[in-house]
Length: 551
Image 1 (cartoon, rainbow, N blue to C red):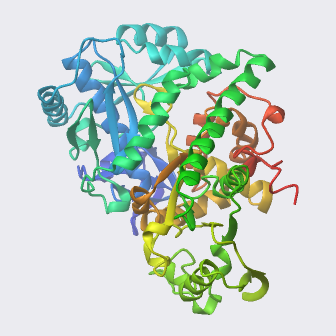
Image 2: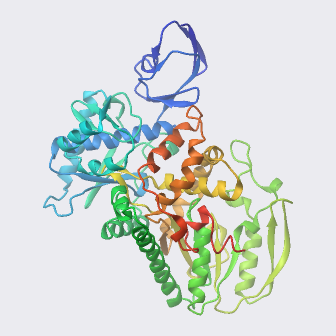
Image 3: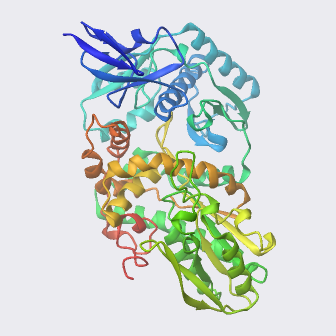
């Protein structure tokens, strides 16, 4: 049974299986490991030749496991202190988790003293270093466990699972599950902060993109307000959990049509509200700037906003910031020596400002069009606009003041667009906004570029790096935040994304990402896409858009 492990570049031979945990020398900064590229818990046994790499919290995969443990730790602490109160967790401002008492009719209100007590209890559990014991129970046994610990929200999701068994982690007699891998024991979860953020609290935890450190908390009122609105609407129409969404479908087309129209009408209402704001200030609005992270639906949104404004007698013109890219050889390189097409220096900012100012001054301007095949610009379009015609620009840097320096800020109306999903699998397991965008991109890249899911997932860290650097900090400067999420969309994306994800080898480097997304999608019931309006933002990803496919 002799085998060799290449452990972080050092080769060691073994003659019997070995647990990864035994190779860490008790270092609790190590969260997990990759074995031949696949992420494994530290209690995984290796008995074959393999490359082993231990991961700390500054690695994305390790951070996901750590964050999952923090949610378990919080749920356990609140159960110990307040067994009659359930908290609902959602992803929130400043890269935190927001927790609020989930029972809307309760007479209990969260206080600062309660927050302090919860934090102390979490630290006590960490110091006790309780083991996380993985268990598998039958669905019938799971029902009894859910009832015992008051996890009735988890009971609601059981009927939508095809499996006959349920995973749990037992931590000193407390049972729960966060739908993924865990650290070996609570002693690994040393770093976190709780902040009273009435009516709830925020949980800070280390982030991989911050070199494994807890980011400084920054209140983000614009982003926070958009999340609150998304939550309020989901609660109002009873679409705040996967089980509630599935119940609305009811296995008949009429219910599915109603669900689709309900969500689409929310977008219509938001567009109408946005159009009214622009109309009310149209005499001073000359530049409408649209930005958001990848796969937010920016292109379709800009098309729909154009129609909305035209219905109000406003005639906007659209200019693509992509047409102002510099030639490849003039684009700066990043720290890895790759061309950084997402940095602001990749754009000809001087020409862009000259063109915008010329148009606003009533001049006829020759506009460029960038040909990515020839790596050059051609000036094949002349444009002159009316004295009150606004210009719509859309792109990663559209809200960046450094890119539109020649245009006074008071002439700009800034729109930030992103899916602001506030739905959960259950109280302790919110859906990741990032995973929703990744699923959209996987489907879109396959639909329009022929890319497989593995290729899209492999590029995602680079995309995310650019978003943190260039986009997220601009959202607080927005005049309007448009929530592009449609509560039914995962019921549709499932049909498109699932076959692509299942093609990824489980032993692949990207197997864990595929597994995570599959485990998310499998809970959603299917919805027939034939009832989706042709101008829906979702059509930008699944195909059939009246804006794109009709061209």
